[in-house]
Length: 100
Image 1: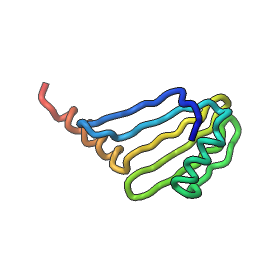
Image 2: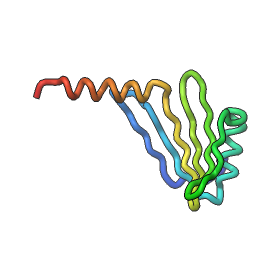
Image 3: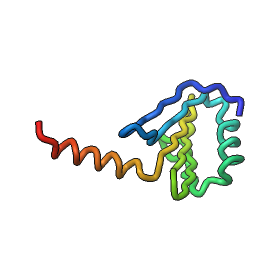
């Protein structure tokens, strides 16, 4: 929703996009969070700021997890497929058991 994106990262595993993240200037954090709320509704979980950290908001469904972290200068939003961690573990097992 109009917020200039500072960085986009994509992570593929076996040719399938597993995670992607965006980083936006903190001055645009309300626009980013409003766009997420508009698209996905209220976050299912909000973790309050604690000493040395900032508040975070999280959305989950059967297919994916979205996490938004607001820092001092930036907002980081991560989109992760539900099967991502399992796919990474499977890949690690295959790499360990593969003959040299």
